[in-house]
Image (cartoon, rainbow, N blue to C red; front, side, top):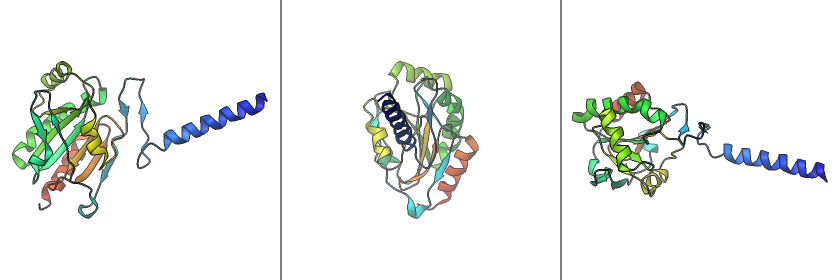
Length: 195
């Protein structure tokens, strides 16, 4: 009897591990790091050719300043969507690069918007002041904005950066910290496409 219980426990643990491993997309593993609430990833980049892109993404919500944001207002431009929260170490690590992208591409038809489902306004505002963030972030405490993205492209890590083409379709996704040169390359490629 004891052997059957042990065998059942081992089988159950193996099935659970298999199910959890099956939750990652495109073979990219993700692990909770020290129960800090963020999910780390290796910065894996997935791009889609124009004919294979899904969308357009219907992403809207209220930012931390109380203003309504809707990426549909930016159709015809490239949009960078970044999931983040203030106590996420990888989010802090990539913040200055995202700010640089927002500033450098502001006059080239590129918009950056954050999605934050964790923070209250005080924490989000402190983060924005610390890193001099020039772009808005949707307060997504209901998860509706992330759900809108999930319906089009899997979001398996925080941070995740999704880049929308001029038609509002998903052109690329970066899981984990967005490498600045990679992100800029994706943006440049999408800007070079005709609307």
